[in-house]
Structure formats: C-alpha cells, structure tokens
Length: 161
Image (cartoon, rainbow, N blue to C red; front, top):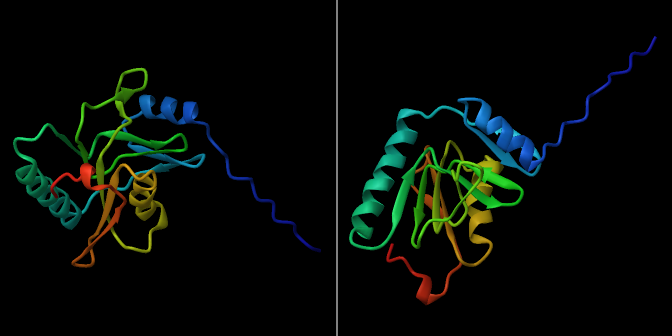
C-alpha cells in the first residue's frame, strides 16, 4: 500500500495581510515577497554590534540633519518587502506611510546585524535597499569581524561615513 504525502501549499500573503498582522500583536514580523517571518530575539553580541554601530555613526553625523532609529522602526524597502533593521539612518526629512504613520519609506542607510552571512533573507535586505542607486545597506556578521556594505551612490549622495 502506498501512502501519498500531501503537502499544503505555502500561503502567500498580501501587504494588507501583513500590516493587519503587525497591528494585532506584539511580535515583530517581517514581510518578504508574500511571506511573513517572525523576527528572532537578539543575542548579547547582536546587541553590542547594533549599539556600537549606532554610537559610532551618531558621533560621525553629529550636527548634520539626520535621524537615527534603532531596532523597532518598520521600514518599507519595496512594495514586497518590509523589515525591522537594527539601525536606520535618514539623511533628509523622514517620510512615513501606514495608517498610524509608522512605516518609514525613505531610509538612507540600513544596517542589519546577522547571525551568519549564509542567511539569504537577512543579507538580501542590504542589497535590496542599495539596488535603487540612492540608498546604502550594510550587513554586519556576529561570527566574523567584518561587515559587508552594499553601496551605489554618486559623490553628492555621500553621508561622510
């Protein structure tokens, strides 16, 4: 007798579904290409990298018209991607979307601290952000002493980092 294994097709969510989930619970969730992901808790090393990055960048940008957000700022990277980067920098006036004006749509730089450089969804955030040629993304890895910067910019877009 042969048994058939039935697999359920993976549910594809809309942006509206995602935003409804976001407002209903306290768990941070990210949205990428129709899929919703719960975000994992942060380790000590993850927090140290994020806070040291914030301190370092903040001291370099002192006196410039910039805003820096840490951990809990929801960012719209595209119509198919929303995430909570570890550090977000906005060089110009921040622009928000959403029913509660709580979704940042014009980040200049995002920094994503990742457990490993083998996690494609996390590492893809930095590349996706910089793909439009106007913004920068950086992935910092907990297990390595380096960071990878995805960057496309013209000289007049430099932030002095």
